[in-house]
Length: 213
Image 1 (cartoon, rainbow, N blue to C red):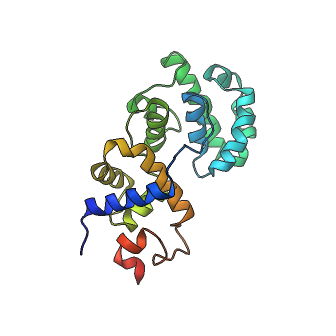
Image 2: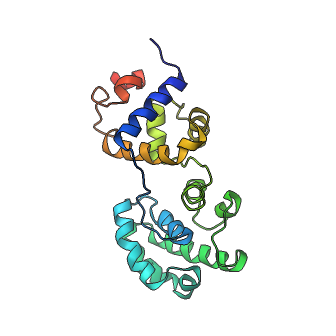
Image 3: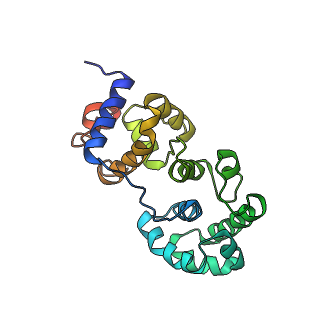
């Protein structure tokens, strides 16, 4: 029997819940600011590496006030192992200055204000809104984008389209857990390369037909 998108979404959500009954964001942080910095550093970098570097950075500066007192080059030297250090160091220093000057030293709690910060795109802003402020959001990374297409939950035309499609398919109260569960599943069971859809607990049931050719 052919499943509807809603039925496929429900199946995926149930199966993901079996694999990951409890979800915790894998980036170590203690407040909205340290989360924001960690998410910026996570671009094209593993969570493990970010968690190795942030203690070194936060030992020197874990508030916007302290961060602006560091030189950009000092930040760059510390975060170099995370990759893209020149851009990320300028971004972290710049966003810290704006948080001080425009937001009284506190990370803003709206998408518009977050996205206006240097090095903060829509996905980063969504993560902060969701994890720091508890505002429903469905951040879409490469894993989620890939799996939504594989599971025929979205067309895969763009990240924005994937986000919109998933928000329609899943109840708002599931977004926080689901976005992490899909990421974890994509890393561990449904990778971009060397993936056998017949052995995948989800692709084998709701996978796109082209995967099996």
